[in-house]
Amino acid sequence: MPMQAHDIEDLIKDALPDATVVIRDLAGDGDHYAASITSAAFEGKSRVQQHQMVYKALKGKMGDELHALALQTSTPQD
Amino acid sequence: MTEVRDWIDNVVKTNDVVLFMKGTPEQPQCGFSGRVTQMLDYLQVPYSGVNVLESDMLRQGIKEYSDWPTVPQLYIKGEFIGGCDIVTEMFQSGELKDTITEQGLVAEGA
Image 1 (cartoon, each protein chain N blue to C red):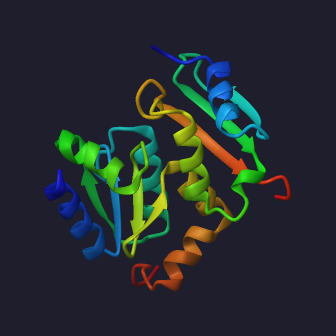
Image 2 (image 1 turned 90 degrees about the vertical axis):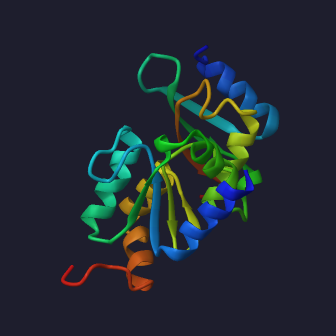
């Protein structure tokens, strides 16, 4: 079952309450999105670790219901 | 599942540059996998392609190995570099070329 943009945003904000999340629907089919996420929780983390934090927030939906999520992560200072 | 993990570990550690992908470098079967092969070809870095579509155990095993939910996955000198997003970011910033050059992995005459 495809996901809605606000579902993705809610899941990310549940795990990263301070995050600002901008989601773009890439294909209008509910499983190809791009997301830009800024959070202080990313500080000191490598890009791979930052993206892994986001995937954990999505509770296994990434690669399952969600086929593609182009991620851009940054800290407030970036 | 440990055999798959051991097999993956061996592939990652015995190849300088290895891309776990959908399809093959000559015939990628997913846009994201294809994009990474194009970047590696552009940088003229020799690499091995592993087609995860050949085995469900491999397709699942690689995700557990790196704790990363998607394919493609790029490894350089045994280290997980990232998926299509991160490799693209590194390619555009020049970081991927630097990494490959520093490791002496660029093909002769490149």
